[in-house]
Amino acid sequence: MGLQEFPTLEKILELATPSPDSKIYSKALKYFIDNFEEKFSNSYNSAEVNVAFLPCSDSDIYAKPSECFTNPECKIMKLQVIHQDLRYQVGKLGVCQHPDREKLLNRLTQNPPQDKNNAKEIFEYLASCKSCFISSDFDMLNDFKFIPVKQSLISPRNCFFEIQDEVYVFNHFLHNYINSFFFSIINI
Image 1 (cartoon, helix red, strand yellow):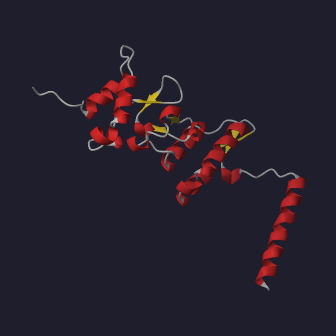
Image 2: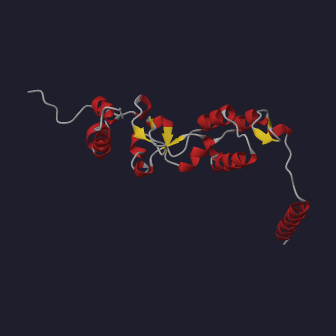
Image 3: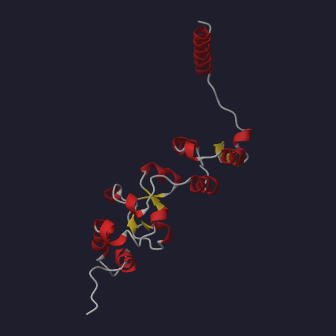
């Protein structure tokens, strides 16, 4: 008769894509995830998926596996985060935990922080990902204006840290203490 045992990958992804006139997409997505290993993994390649079928943490937003991430902290970079209910199920679908260095650099250069608070959050997030960057990334960023200072943006090369006297004294003391300690150990 030609009946298929289960839908093709293309058909299940089509059914899992939300549309205004369809209420089947959530059932299709559940079926796809539940049966991924057995029925779809051999023909699935996340890099080739051109269908935004994965629900994100922002309601009514769906993304391709390459356009969303499981780490909720990357939202500070205005990237899509997979819906919390799916966070631990989508690794097999090619959803990464963090964006790659190129995506992070593009976000930073295309949409630099506009105030100190936003910059602090973004820089803290980027610091948590610093192992993914290469030295040429830092060289490029040295001259790029992405640090907000008094209603304008400046580059790291033209920026200096603001240090209060008390902090400087404490850091100077701590630095001297550590150097003395290591010098004593070396001379023992």
